[in-house]
Amino acid sequence: MIVVDTNIIAYLWIPGEFTSQAEKAFKKDSDWVAPLLWRSEFRNVLATYLQRKLMTIDIALALAKEIESYFRGKEYAVSSEQVLLLAQESSCSAYDCEFVTLAKDLDLRLLTTDKKILKAFPHIATTPGK
Image (cartoon, rainbow, N blue to C red; front, side, top):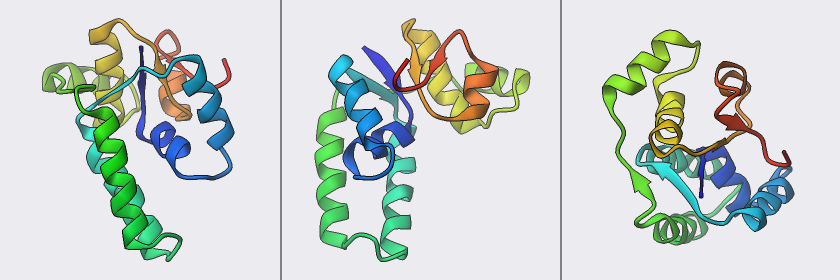
């Protein structure tokens, strides 16, 4: 089991430059979990694709449904206190710290490509391919 950030989720389900890395990570460990925040962040990714006309609404809705189905039972609420304490001690956003908090709570690694998270939390965060 591994905590994944929203970018990793997007890389796996939306073909692009980093899809092959996400696929390798998924083959290595397909039991992905995330904080509830992932849904809003992923909707924002889809909205960006829609606004740039890189995806149709039908595809965006189908992806949302598929991925939400995959993560059902694999989403967690996290403590505001823990998120804010981590944000205070790092240069990371509260959004980023939700993923770090979940990884800490579950004693798991966090799969991310976010340079700030990787720098601030090297004992928790890792990149695909490591």
